[in-house]
Amino acid sequence: MSEPERIGEAVAGLVRKAAGDALQHPELKRRVRSAKRVLKIAALMWLSMIVIVIGMIASGLLFGPTGAEGWLATPLAVIASWAAILYWFRVRKHTPRTLAHRELAQLAAHTGEWLYEQRGGLAAGAKPQLDSILQQLEALSPQLRALQPNNPAAAEVRRLIAEELPELVEGYHKVPPAFRGQSLHGGPSPDRQLVDGLATVGEELARMHARLAADDLHALATQQRYLESKYKGDGKIK
Image (cartoon, rainbow, N blue to C red; front, side, top):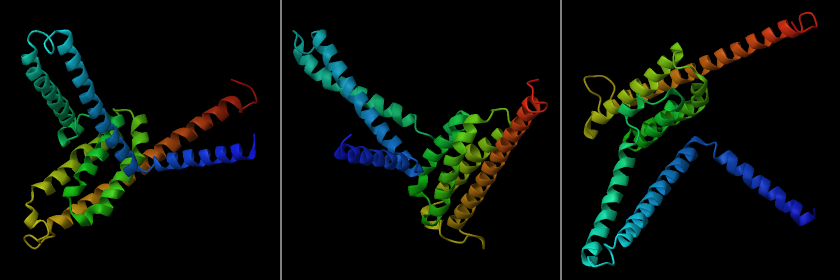
């Protein structure tokens, strides 16, 4: 391999590594998923238009004896199909109601996407807590994929991120914006309550993450001791 080829290969490797490292960032991952969602919508809208036009031509409604009606019906059919596609994608967006029914393996990712969509309507002071929760959810996702649904820890995780966290955010949204920064009845303001509540959720997610990791480490150590006792106890396979 010549020197320019070696340099080119090294540069390509660095680019691939940088791209891979960038995609590990939770916020960038969400932006990539959002971009894919937009591209999917655009592709379906384009495909539906092509199918409708071809169908109209094949049936003779566009250029046949009833061409006048076809020229009117075709754009109406295209608009109707586009509206149906947009509505379908809209109702598929994550909401507190749909989060409760998500599979455990995908729950952390879906909750993270939903929470990221809410950040524009939340208190500016809650951004550090939001970022911490999003990172915790990202770290928790692989553990939830390996967690059995009947495990007691699964119920705890589901209750926290699919019920209690959405209830906190939805409760904040219900407070009129003019009152969110005010101290009510001598207590903390809704903004402060949101920040403190999100901080508590983040701390609990960190504890859950550590507890699940400890369970995994314990299971690995148990398996290692079993293998040693089975294959190294007397130097023979039992």
